[in-house]
Image (tube, rainbow, N blue to C red; front, side, top):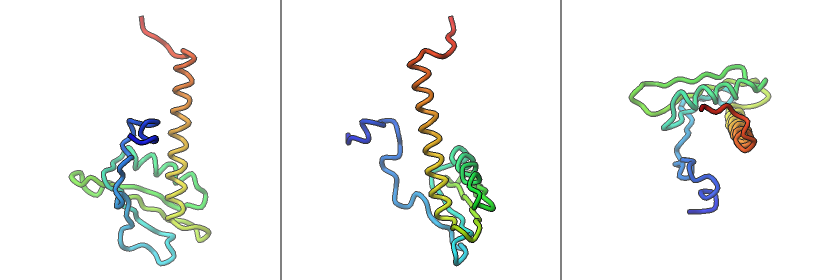
Length: 121
């Protein structure tokens, strides 16, 4: 077990395949309009990521879809202003989502250590 796995042994992202995320054919030449395909993901990631990406004022549109229930993938469509591109917006959205999850985790650990939660009898 490597150091990162010792720190976060339950995270399933240690062996993320190289093709986890792909750009679907049909992106605009300037990359302001791109559809990404994320393998082995569903509404759990799709909706949270869409929300994070839409917080960026340089993003005009972000939506996600599950192409078919039997396909284990999520499509995320991003359209941006001319001042950025969809790839940078996706990267920022992923970073923002990771930061939000880390903050929630830190608050949970803090509350548990403080004993600041209701207990049943």
